[in-house]
Length: 112
Length: 120
Image (cartoon, each protein chain N blue to C red):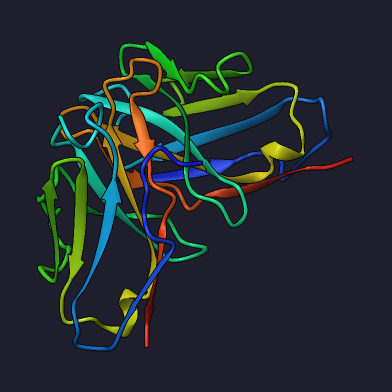
């Protein structure tokens, strides 16, 4: 069981927007702005899409945006494209010194 | 452009030791404020952080694996390595190495992953 909770799957049609949630606790998402999101196409290296809750690395489309409210972080993808179909994982810093990095279980995005 | 590449046996027998190496290119493993991490993904499951080594050589491990894991670095070869002892079928997974930026605590570069199967 993953430390962060994500929906197993979401779907949307091309051009639409979708949001993926990632719920943690006050020991991770709630108290720290170190939430990151990763896109993973099977067989390829995962790619960093969002870091520090809202920041996009250079080269990542501005169709990807991040936010946080309380213990829940969210990734929104606007103007869905076929190439966005992938697995998405959230991650957060955790104040648990024994486990400083926690991941979500992943969300499969299907573009209909 | 930093690149990471995992290498090592794809098949390990139960009770034996899994050993993987991550070769870093496009940058020095000993410069900057980075953690060098290992992450794994069993089939049909999510990502699991295994542990990391800092540029200073200090390490942190997932408590669930701590008794069996060692991560080390060879700066002369620009590589870092994973050793996981006493493996079982539950350790079958795709293993990734990744660079973890200390200032943003995000994994900004990943290897493509290597499948390790534990089977006799």
